[in-house]
Length: 119
Image (cartoon, rainbow, N blue to C red; front, side):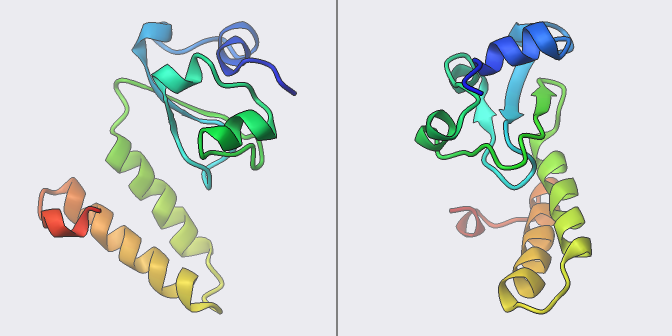
């Protein structure tokens, strides 16, 4: 714990495809935590307090690295489809929210979303 995120990626995980300058964002704690853009990845530590200060989290610590060739909307849509599929459907926020999110991201992906939907 408390290892710099950049050191974790560059030294222990083989680095970013295309080099550090090709980094778009990192999800530091699994798919349910906030993405960190490159500028925050350069200073973030892999610990609870540091990641919380960036409004992200350690979560499962399943680090997801995305380079500049990554389509961010497509990636988040893929993760949303996973959560929709895995939801047990017992609670309204998951049952309704994941469906709403998949529908919204699909409209954004194909250019059919309204600016009012993006807040």
